[in-house]
Figure 1 (cartoon, rainbow, N blue to C red):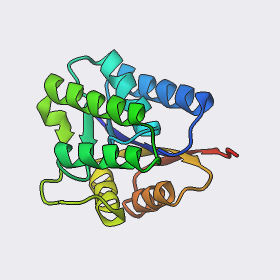
Figure 2: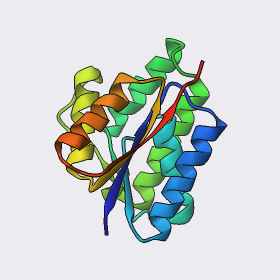
Figure 3: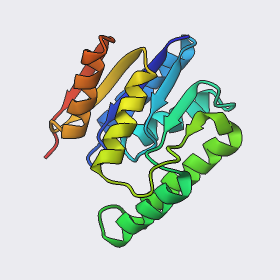
Length: 169
């Protein structure tokens, strides 16, 4: 079984990107491979949602979190309080991650050392994702730096990379 990393924007998505992510994940699961992602909003959320529909036991998903789930939860609710995301987005994401944890505790891989979430912990999570991936499919929206970093790290590792580019205003 191959593990395919799915990466992309958490800030900006649309119905086309969601459809493309779901279609890609569907192909991966149907052929018997697994999906690795980062447990964020946007592309990561769509990918995990699709895997959970197709593989309810969640044996073919690995979600790498940048910290323990309780720290991630507090962070997302703080971001909602700041107006960066909505409270509903924070609730939906945390519920999704808790559902995954119940279905297959081994699928949710927490960084137990991180005490706060910041650019460093998120980039460290990206390295873990790429270290565990055999391939990367990126959904690169508006030339985001995080997605570009992921693409660059995958290329450095010499794993196959497929990039879908999107420009959203």
